[in-house]
Length: 202
Image (cartoon, rainbow, N blue to C red; front, side, top):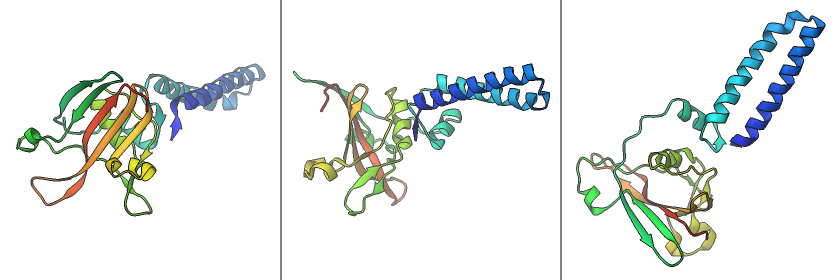
């Protein structure tokens, strides 16, 4: 993955070089490369236009593909709860509650793509696109990088299944995972149980 801002800088420099080269070959009369240069300038211009308008903070092949051709994902059912304390304001999006579990029409909670760590006990989020698609649906800012399971960093049992982004634009982002079994089959998967946006920086 590469930051969108970095890519914009690189493409802008390449575009400027191509424009200078175009002026040079016109002055010199090297018309044999004129068409290729113009096509390249147009291509870079289209790419630059996309980069300047996309909301992606970082770029990857999967993120760009999903941005250009949005995948069909369910409109997930969730509840929203707000909590205030003297230190922070929390907004909690819950995808698994007793009410939702008892609703046969409610879609299954969103899947969280995880990679098992070498220790065989914890999981790391490396493929952030599965999470970012859900954040898009909640109209929340995307994350720009993956994180380890918090338990792998703290060793605290209460941090099992917890993922935390301390550099989130709105404060701190916390994702809680669980194992969910689909109603119509015996298949189980790692699901997002809740997403918490905490205004406090940890």
